[in-house]
Length: 118
Image (cartoon, rainbow, N blue to C red; front, side, top):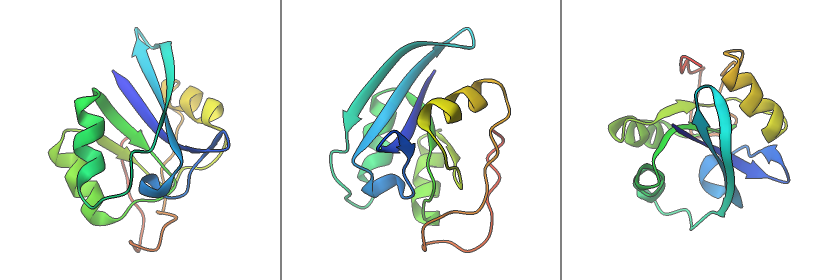
C-alpha cells in the first residue's frame, strides 16, 4: 500500500493540489518500507487523482480538498483523509497506529466535515 501526503516544508500542506510536493510512503506489514518525495506535477482539474493512482497510491492525506477532487479520488479507489495538520512524520505514524483523525477541510472548496475512516 502507498500513502501520499500533500507536503510543504515537512508539514501537511493545507491544499492537496497546490502543495509543492507529495511524500509517498510504501507500507508493508504495517511499517514504512520506503519513503519517496515527488514534486507536484501541477494542479490541473481532474489530473492528480489519476496521476497518484498510477503510482499505486491508496490513500491521500491533506489539510484540504474540494468535494469534486474527493469524488475523483473515490473513483480511483483512493481513500481521502482531510482536515489533517502537523508534521508529515507524525501524521504517517498516527495513520499507521490507527490514531489519525480527519476533520473539516482547510481549503475553501467545502463546508462541513469529512470522515475518511482513518
